[in-house]
Image (tube, rainbow over all chains, first blue to last red; front, side):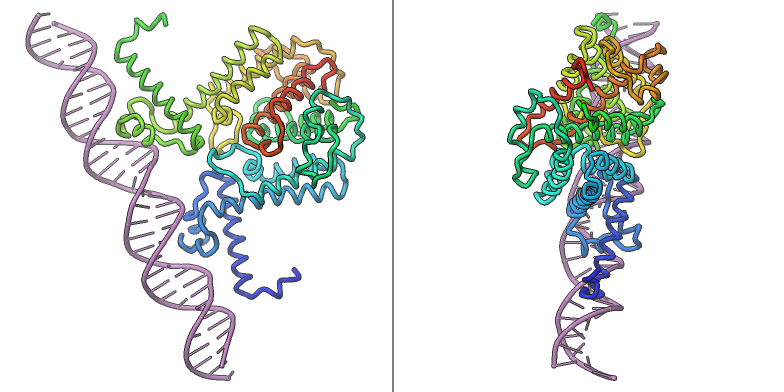
Length: 219
Length: 219
DNA sequence: TGTACATCAGTGAACGCGCGTTCACTGATGTAC
DNA sequence: TGTACATCAGTGAACGCGCGTTCACTGATGTAC
């Protein structure tokens, strides 16, 4: 907002159009999945002709990469906000769930089926690390009354990559990994509709798994 | 094998070509994902022209549906075989992991990101139930020394759909759901490559989560 | 304030591609008498 | 065993489509003097 004035009208207009392009792209992804994203279709929706989009994005791949980046960024911000406020893993869990439900295809763009060829740029994996770091911080703040397991030996010393080089107690790392994989397990199956027709409330299943994670004698 | 003789040469040939088409389709899916599957490309690979495939499949959608069906069927068979032999949830877990690792894209065809429009035919969801039933059976055979949780109340009476109408103890159902969601969580993240660069052995993480599930004071 | 110039958003035509799918047809394989 | 017919796998041409992307161009907006 502070630099709004420093931008020329042209720059503002550019930013605005770029935003609308991405918005339409998200709508399209929500409708038919990421692989069906089409530049021409977006242009048509916006009332302009295909080649015009090349003023704003280098091409289809660049647009998709930016959408992926935005998705990671959005989750990282949501996570950080929840982490700073309550600093509780439960808060993180509910933030994650809310974020996932608000746009399933965006969630899948981050954690879903990978395109075999594609490899994310470094800055995106950096954001992924940021997300893990937030989670690790919250886990490190929990009382580490977990009994040691055989897995701890393997975890010893690992995870320093995400936590800005700080050493991480294996118990916290283990909890973070369980948090991540278990909640992703419930969420991805829920979003994919695998619970429909089972007469089961995914929210309760999610809560049950979360209880097992955050409870005092967890694991 | 018994009915090999009853089939005419033409029928055998048909079956053979159908099999090769599917095989090429799987190769293509493994290379570029399911959304990139192309009938013409398959035909070209087989040295025949595009329209020839319509002798064997009604069209692209029919082929994909059959691939999905085969994937479910394959997992159900693998699961059933593991369940009949050892009848142990650990055996099921390792069968699942082996099956997933042997063909990641096939795993994702079953449990991966859904195509927004697509809805699986009834016979496929029936196979999905069969898979769950095998898992439930194994869980029901475990000692049910789990402490009751608030989630049990919601589970009471549910799950009869999969278990041929038999009533299922909530503890077994709960364990089956945790088994499914937790292992899927680890597996899908592993197959998607989310652990690479973390210096972490997914096999050990999988084993750790499995221990938490099958251990005596699990949860 | 007005004029000359530069910047840049957007257009329309075009290229080449691959897709799914249909259709009329050829030619080989199997069947019935 | 031989002939007449039916079945059916596969071809080649064609249709219509939408895609990403390039290119030369128009016209409006901003900038410099």
